[in-house]
Length: 337
Image (cartoon, rainbow, N blue to C red):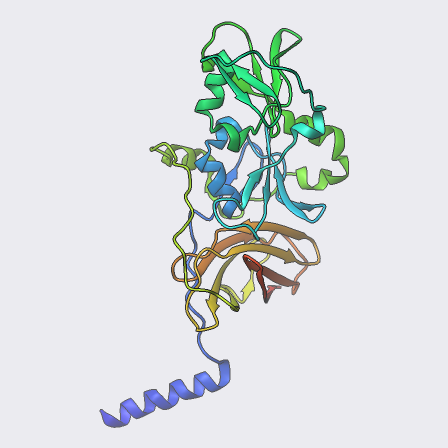
């Protein structure tokens, strides 16, 4: 029995010396992204969390693109809004709805009426929302999803419209309830008008082994709450980023599953680190936000490798950011024959 234990120890030592230390088991997270089969686009990580929390099915609509960099900013276009990711900000401010209203409509200052219970006055722009628009604003996360008004209510075609910093709403005038108000596809109009050069990001994308959007919507049973800032954490002066893959050589057309671990200068896990992933291969360059690190300093994600040539190399570049601290991580793997 003693000789057998010695043999096991020696065998383990030989394996360690040849292959190196074993990597942590990478487990797929079913909640790391969602896929819209009707739109053929993925919504990853931090964008997915924000989308679900603010009832994106109603307020933002389906995705029109994959995530991509525009002017150095990671963005993703949806039918009614554009989301942008700023990893240098603390939660809950990393994901924001872009100020598309400024791109589509000129600022229109006017003197509002005197204070009234059916109006909300915005000193920042000198404008107000009223009646049905006010009720919609108050029940659809107001400033977070729409921002401040840029115009007063105006007639457009057969309905009324009001422009905001982050979007546009229309009102059919049938009654004074929020039901008669809906957000407009302003983001789609801007994308069609200004971003023809980014048409490649609008092409149908394969499912990154994400949760189905329809099932994700059904799983949201309780109304979301506004995120709050986390309690203070011990000061982090340095970060270490490690990237692990589950499959060393992926079959063509298969998926890869990845885990990112972040530790501080004392080898302690760091929670809440903002992460952006860029995938490089001979057939694609993609970037998207993933979930921030959890209490164990880990974040998981998956992606479809597509159909690159045999023996192709994929490079996974991870950018980790916590306040002003930034740290890269990198991992490579190959496809099969």
